[in-house]
Image (cartoon, rainbow, N blue to C red; front, side):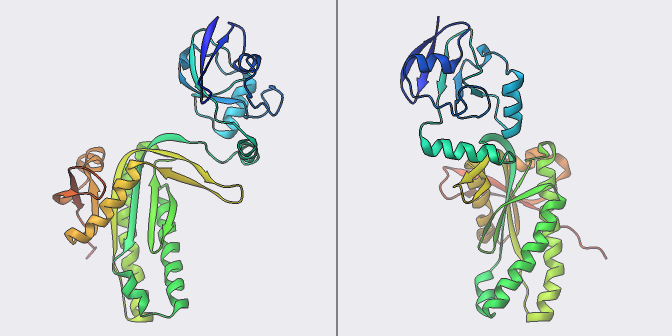
Length: 305
């Protein structure tokens, strides 16, 4: 017999060599949800293997099909299909009726992702002094200009394999590397330059319509983040969460301090290599972070003659 250290129950459960995790927990009268009756047709019995994944049986065709359908990460296993040859430390994430309902939603929408950690490039942008710009326009025009701006920026992001994660007032949060991780940084840098080019074009329209124009400020960081769909049953979105996101937002804000328009972190410079041209560097404190952080201003593109 081997042992299952089961969380959040804080129980030790004996498990035989041919016994599934679900069978072992039910034998100990643990209320382990299994909506399909342990047939591998739902994911309500799933567990996260915290230690000992290498000792688990390989996914059988039934489990693999479901894992592919709802994008289960390797450490998340169906308890009804998984056996072990050694001790395991596991966590049950499905505990009550609300959990079951949310899991059913995941099965009905297999395009949605559970939380996984990925290395991504996160770009934040906002419009310089947009509040004063908007204060001088009628309400309809404020929304019209923003929609025109976001439409143009959306085209740029899609062209460079990015994903708009959030609109924050006049700001954007964009993630690169979800589908093309090998080019996350180069895609993000190219998108940043393209965004600035498109704003120059947009400014011609704004001058004609309102006798005004604006500039965008961009901050970019590269690192690990948790990616997954969040929200309730009525609305869910793909979110990117973690310190990488927070740092990228702080870098964008640092443009105001240094009078710059495109700042990147040292991690971006290292990942981009010599192909990236930077004009100057700064040692800066970032709100909520300890110490000083090295930031670099990306050299502006030279406009064609």
